[in-house]
Image (cartoon, rainbow over all chains, first blue to last red; front, side, top):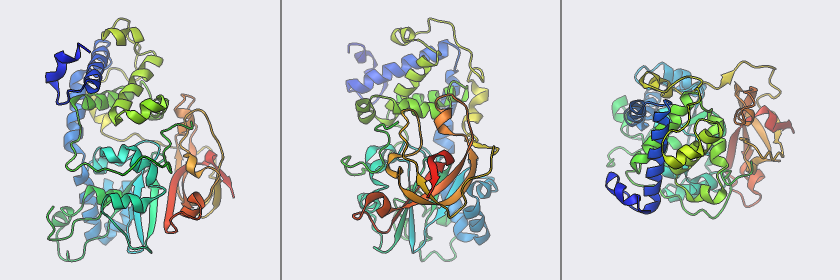
Length: 211
Length: 219
């Protein structure tokens, strides 16, 4: 692995497995560029767009609007893609976004057991745990055990509905609005909406709790 | 295929471990891999189902021991070689050595970036009426294709109820193998936790999958 030593200064990780990967990834980009398939600046632009334009702030705005606007909420639950499309400030979503509502009787949780399907436009790129074996294997069999790993527990009689994203439909959980937020603005409410609350592995922040 | 990627219901992988303040990427190369996959897909080198299939066909021990973007990288490299966009010789050398293969949508340059930021469209015109209605009981077929499928093992043979109809969509089983889109009706089918996991299963659990019509029989 003598090559690796030349490249250690380029990245944070310095054990050899990652260094070798770094070299192989660079080699592939070089080949794709030399063959005229991709322009490196266009790759930079993709990364920048992912870093700046998508993220849970998009989903949080949708949830906060649904909490304050009953007509929007109804439209959202009937056709998520169409309703979100009416909000100019939220990034464009695909055609098949389904919004599922948590109630006192039912808690929803989203998984992709086969790979990593996730509503990128609403939540950003998925966290590592969402794409990893422990979550993908257990969410459909032992969701209460998975929730315990997040320090979340539900009353025993609440139905748990797990949505396995096995096609190009994407699911976003509409969590319950926290008590004690009467009169709050959409902007204030959006601050309470966490990424995990829209996956179903968490709840929104409570008013007054530190974020 | 009955691969290790089909993880629903498997035991032994341990606790879910959320990382506080997780960064979007854990190394610079992960960003480049993500961008190359998106760019080459948008340029027409492969469709999303084919790219999933190449990750699934990684050797099980590689699949289980590789990080997420490492799997993306390994799948991408192998797929581009097999589809003729580059050669093993070039990969070994780290430089282009043969002429390029034409891409369906041309070179991925700055003018193409916006296409990547909009999700692809998978809905298609229906070739035939839907066989199932909301509320119908259906049995997930006991099929075990060695090629790509989106019917997870843990529901095969079990009876569920049709809850939503999403219209007609590209059929991943044929699209992944480059045998055409063959649009199929797509339904959300919901199963009882105890139907899937037996008497020890959580009685409050319901699990749904999105199932293409060829995955289902009337029950």
